[in-house]
Length: 119
Length: 116
Image (tube, rainbow over all chains, first blue to last red; front, side, top):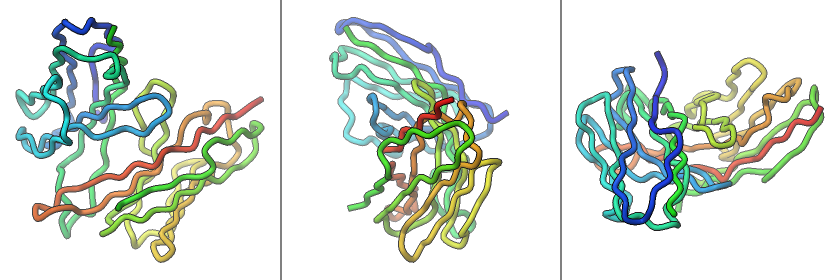
């Protein structure tokens, strides 16, 4: 099973709402990622969790709050978003986050994304 | 500053024809280079991943090449099909920080359209 699943597929929310995006993988991967992608742009890294601990926060506003309850699940909690936050939110996972002499990087598997619209 | 540049920005070809997409990078220290295919509104799907010691890698009708000396890669698509219409993204990996974390730099992609 090389699948990363994301729910919901689409989400429309107002600026005062609180919602969550969910991501799940059962490949035994210990690194999980959140990306934000605007139209016709490449994905931009937001957060990286390595062994369920937050390793990277790419200066993301606090209205985005990640959570990794266990090694298979990754959530992104949303609160008081702005219209400019509308985008495709992608989750990804890989075996580990580190590059070692034994491996020059592991493949990242992406989920199908959640299309978020903030009104 | 790590950068990945792709060309052309967009490409339209007839079904059945071949095409080649280019990727130039200035990423250091280089670990690996990946090509992804992304359909509109979907997550990227991996096509190939190559380390510096690999010059060529194939995945069906997709063949990627890597020249680590000139820091260039290409993705060649043979006998194109309508389903090949997508964005193709070149991603270069580098080792960053004292923990050896992996840092990916994404190219802006080439938008490929196959017409019947």
